Image (cartoon, rainbow over all chains, first blue to last red; front, side, top):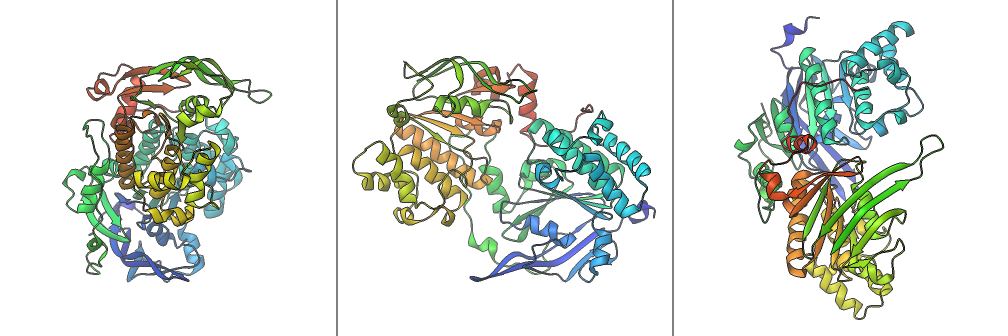
Length: 293
Length: 257
């Protein structure tokens, strides 16, 4: 498949996605009818805790908690209807076509397996490679996430790696199958700022070189704004605003503007930080088709 | 108010690793009523400085004075009345099965203060929580409300110094602004001295008069915040932290081992 044939098309199409939880206290609507598309570009979802951003990412892979109820008018990935796909079909999508990088390498790598074996496992499972071919592929993958001594890292256990190295191993594992779409949920939040920038650079380079789509989920408005081509701002399970990357200052929704103002800035001293005033009207449902295009 | 001279803290390492020198030769002077910040990344030793100051870590060397009084590793009860600490994680630092009232009343009872009921009421008011919250349990509070309770617990003893260890890094940006504003107002109202530690340069710059940048257990740079804002930092590491505070910026970078 020539990836360039698809460059004009959307990889992922989401329309009227809803996630509900049935609790003894009643129904909790966590994602409330959102729509967006992702092409071969970097799309960010930004929001505070409880905004529904993580559930949105997990809905795409259908890895929601089992008591969650997900519906959508449309949830398509590269012509595959993810709503109706069988669990075997989903298994072929997960990891091979769509991968997910999670927040903290400490909790998402298997502590009893060497880094190399875990990365190879993905390749062997999805591509039926022999062990020695898989090993070569893993080593070159480790090199492409800019690990200088791939052999040492291959044989290292996760506890022998720093946070930044662990996250590189995770990215290597997620990209070894050459997926078309990468979902990264707070991939750098557990890392120090200096390392954070390096890991983002690796993602940036790999995504553009392999012509992939990226759905980048984060609470960090500045980070997402400077990293992504497009930013969807979520609040209370809805997309309240879509912004072009690098254009955060042109945000028009009072929620986005409030968040930007509430952040202390080194270059802008202020005695008192403006506090976000939440307007209940932000939660009133918009037209079902008023999502981001 | 706070004086440190050549403070060093080491931890016993494993059999092969040898000792870990978490803090090396740190000296600082903080005047009464001043707000001083330490910025650094995880493992830089910034929290260890606070833990040594608060008496949680007794294994330190150097000279430590609070209000001119030299301190020993083991502190008398009166010390804790004047120096209190607020921790990073409001989910972990409050007893899950104690009511807010009990959480706040306990330090007052330990220090044999009178009129505990009245004190609890007053301290809840000063951190902006309704009086009825004293009957709640931590799980019935939001993250921001929990951090208000943690600040109230520190304030109920009417201390002169607050040691703040990443007080807002577990909170959303909008809640962070509320807690930072509360801390600013309390310092002005009660004439408190703050020593604040954070990995977030913008938060430290907002809250403090002077800052120290810490890396690998050492202070590599100390300056008034105005100097930082003007871009007059010297150390490349400080520049890197400044740049990272602005968001993502691609550079040409090296592989790591």
